[in-house]
Image (cartoon, rainbow, N blue to C red; front, side, top):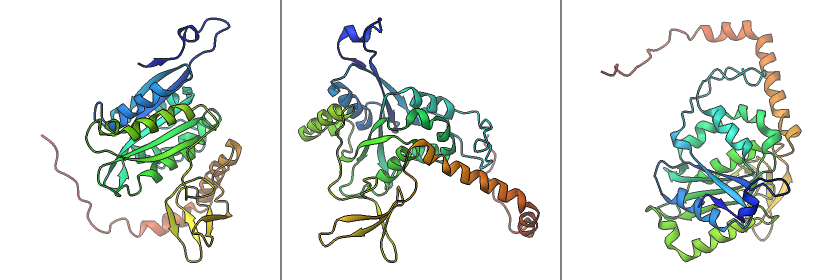
Length: 294
C-alpha cells in the first residue's frame, strides 16, 4: 500500500509525472499504533500518485546538542549520529506527515531532541521551505493534550514547512483512531488537502501561525510558537498586533543564524571577563554520578 496512483505515472519513464514522495515521521515506538496506522490511512486517501516512506523517529540515535556553535559557523556537527540521515530524508520528501503520541502532556521526547539540534535545519531550509505537512497528536485522556501541539508546530516552523493541519485526535488503544467513522472521514479530508491549496485552520488561534497555545502576557497575548503579539476582540477572537519575527522565507529565517554568529563574536570579545566570572564557581558542590553498570 506504499505506492499510490496510476501505474503509468509510477514508472518514471520520459514524459510521465514522477510520483510524489510522502514521508511519514512516526514519533511512537508502537508498531501499528495510532500514529502509524493513521498516517497510512491518510496515504490511502491521497489522490495524487505518490510513494509513502515511513521513518520511526524513536529508532534513531539523536544525541543532545553540545552547544559548540560549530554548525552555526558553517562547520560539520561533531555528533556522529542519525541527525544528518533524518535531515536528508526530510529534504528529499515532497510532503510530510508528523505523528506523535502525547506523553505526560507533551509529544514524545524524540521531537524535543531533534528540535534541540535545530541549528542544522538552516542547512536544508531552501529545500524544505513551504513543503506541506500534516501534524497529528494522539492523546488518551480527554482534554489532556498539554503542550504536544506546540512541540510539533515548533518543529514545522523552524523547517519553514507549511502546516496544512495541526490536529489532536483522542485515541489511546492501538488502532483506536480508525475505529471511529469521523476519524476515517478526517483522514480522507487530510489526504485530499495535502497537495492542494486547502488547509484546516482552527476556529480560534494565532492569526500569524494558527497555533492555539497562547501565553498570557502583562498587557496582551503571546503565541508560544511564532511569538507573535496578539490582542483580543469583543467576540473573544485573537487579533494580530505584532509579528514575532520568526516566520518568513528562508532568507528571513536565516537572520537568526546571523544573530547566533554575532553572539559567538560577542563571546570572543568578552571571553576573558566571562572566564573570570565563572571560574569562581568551579569547585562549588559535588557532582553526583550513577554507579557503573556491570
